[in-house]
Structures are given as structure tokens and as C-alpha cells.
Image (cartoon, rainbow, N blue to C red):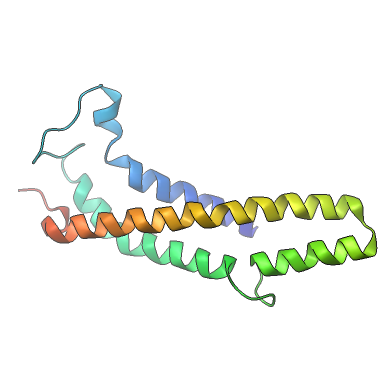
Length: 133
């Protein structure tokens, strides 16, 4: 269940971050400076959601980087892999190792998204929270 939730959060973040450039990219034209990249109000909607998206990304990173006692952490899954290896359960170890590899790959992706959403927040602050004029 946590993997599904993390996937949903990741997809929602991608949708939010890429939603403003979708229409311009689809017709092959690039937006001119001072104009919106999509329909009126996209910037405003994105700015309203930016803080919540940032909180979700921070929460996911905190969980992944958490201690062995925290469910969903890389350290906890690593301990499970080590326990399976020590018990000689090669099939379980392989399965858990694959999950561990995936979970470790989430960290740089989420860190990049955190940087991206920080840039969105900076843009929102400079553009009156994306309000259209």
C-alpha cells in the first residue's frame, strides 16, 4: 500500500509540474514572455497547490530517509534484505532487493522535484501567486 501511495504522489507531482507546459508543447509553439503557457488560471491553480505538493515531497523524503524503526524507510527495507540473506531465503532476498533498488531510486527523483517545486514557489511569489490580469 505505501508503494501505491508514493506512486500516486509522484504522478500527481509530475502532473502539477508539467501541466502548465502541456498545451504549449502539444501545438509545437512556445509561449511568449509575459503570457501564460496554458489556459487562463493555470498559474494560479499551481501556486495554490505548490505548498501542499512541497509538504508531500518532504514527507516522502523524510520517510525514505528515516530510521530502521520507520515503516517505508530504506534502512528498514535494507534490514529486511539482510535478515532474508542471513536466513538463506534467496527468493525473498531477491524480491526485497528489487524493492530496495526501486526505493533508493525514488530519493534523487523526489529531491529533484523538491527543487522544481521550490522554483515554482519562487515564480509564484514574483507573479502575485499566478493571478491573471
